[in-house]
Length: 173
Image (tube, rainbow, N blue to C red; front, side, top):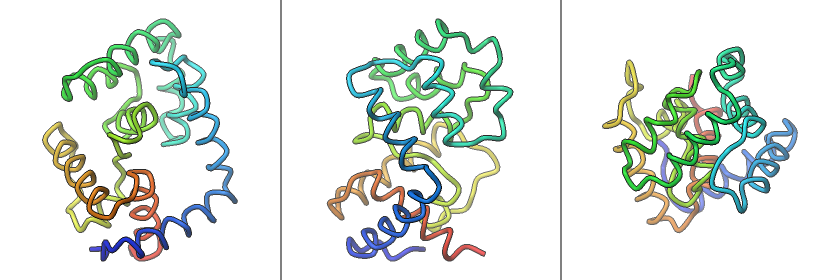
């Protein structure tokens, strides 16, 4: 498990930032954040952008006609406005191709101070066993844990996310 001191988190975040600038990840993330700045929904273009940013493999599922502009707007509005955590993440999974990690990514972009991206690298860095499948209880435990670590170390969830991701990339066999 990663030693979660504030200085370590900041060092690994910086390494992530250096890598992501080379991969144009940084620019995509900035575009998504800028677009979402004053919106309470995703349109199809930005839904696809977030999904592809998280995981390119299910591209055909994301692009399926079931994920129409209207459906994406309606579902993301419902999610973003709900106070019910279960509903908030599960309703996003009505969209074709949206798994727990992708749903967590959508929530992260909409509310970065409340949600962190759920990723196998971050899970490994926490010293947790990768579950056979994700569920609400795992996601809730993950969310509560990263919020506590973030608060304790006085870093944003995105800073913590980048640090955990890069620590795994550098140390996971």
